[in-house]
Image 1 (cartoon, rainbow, N blue to C red):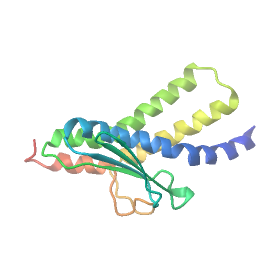
Image 2 (image 1 turned 30 degrees about the vertical axis):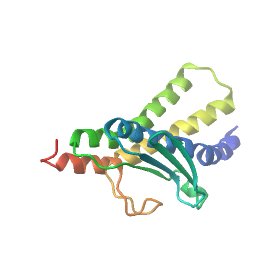
Image 3 (image 1 turned 60 degrees about the vertical axis):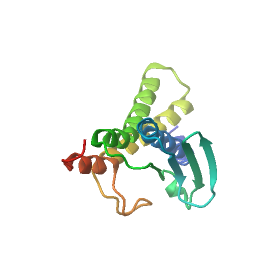
Length: 167
């Protein structure tokens, strides 16, 4: 059964990272919708497919991917606000959503008896969700991927914590 793992994990990454990325970006966008009065844009993918889903002030842009390696690419944008606390909540929402997804997957694997293939798929999604949480919560500047030149959510949170004059 080890050979099937070798095939399943790359397929799980390709198929489920866009879903995990969307969940992560929704984690940012829900507080942004609560704390702002403007549109919030989720962008999934780094190509130019340009499919759009509009749900009131939430706009989800599905752009497709330039390569299979980029299937975890996504970001959310909102109009900046003056509140330091609310800004940190909006930024932290993505990693929190990834962490909650990981916890739900872990509990599903721990508490529910699943067929082997489904268990391997859930395990793969769990590992990628934990990886996404770690890569976004650590305060880093991205250097070698589709996010080159950008900073992680953890880095942005630290930057906000350093600001003294904001509420």
